[in-house]
Length: 194
Image 1 (cartoon, rainbow, N blue to C red):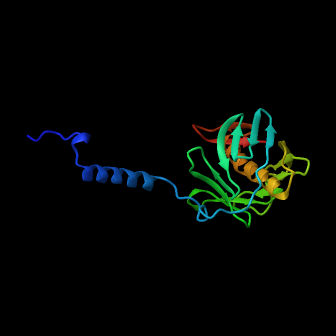
Image 2: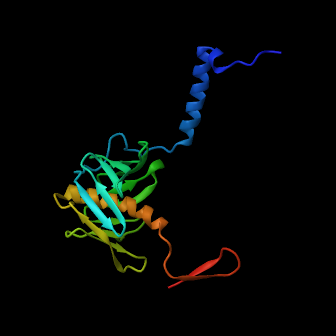
Image 3: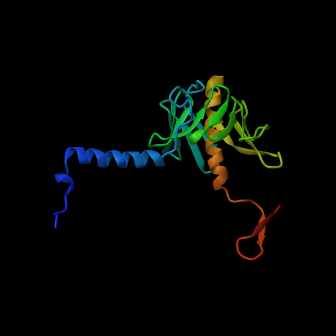
């Protein structure tokens, strides 16, 4: 019977092979960055700005950190790249306003004052010159969605705030409970009443 080889006794070549296979498996599981990630997209100016929305406070720091309630959440650079805390791509704002996520997933359009969801032609969010954030619900009604302070230094700073709002609001939107009363028929079937 052959003795079992430990990691320490494996030859250098075998260790490199094992590590290479492990790295290949990890790479195969990760998402690919948007096509222009390395080059970058829209040129942004990073302000010191704050979005207050109820009990959620979002800060953009000039070094590119995006803080949510004082905790690091994302990073943003002057090339329109938003990355998570591990440096993985979250979104890229292209020069023409298109926003792409990992694997080139369309995430909508962002201008300097308005943004639209993927495959939509009308704005779902606007940041007014006063800093007030307006979100348009499914029926097109304007709903106040907080206020930004510090975004009006230039169109590029305003667009940075609109971009951050667009990306974070999509995440918040999926986490918000649906309003209205609902009833169910059987298990798991519900129809919202408005």
